[in-house]
Image (tube, rainbow, N blue to C red):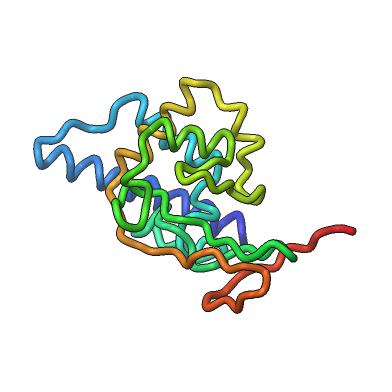
Length: 173
């Protein structure tokens, strides 16, 4: 069942991307570059949408808000609750004010432009192995997406009460 939902989500994401390309072409805008296509492929196989798309964590991804941040967070006991942020280039709620170099640094090292470190639930340790070419392609794709205005909930400290849903991670002792 989960595989079928994943296949449907993938098909919807590809359909949405095709519609965006067709709309750009109809407006006389150039289609995606080879680098952006590679970045879209990488975002798909890296499963960015599995955390960063609203509804994906409960098996109902909202493909109209693909990569626009999640309303469901992850609790790391004693550390806090973290909500996957909006990865679209929206200037208010997403990565619109980030440079390609800042996106690459965050993906590879977990360091945000403001100096805050991403929690290890974001697999930057693995993504640190991206080649320069692939890291640039991923950033180019994220910068080229249509911006989606969607504010994910903020971080909740370990002693604060969350206002949105979250999943509690079990930490082996």
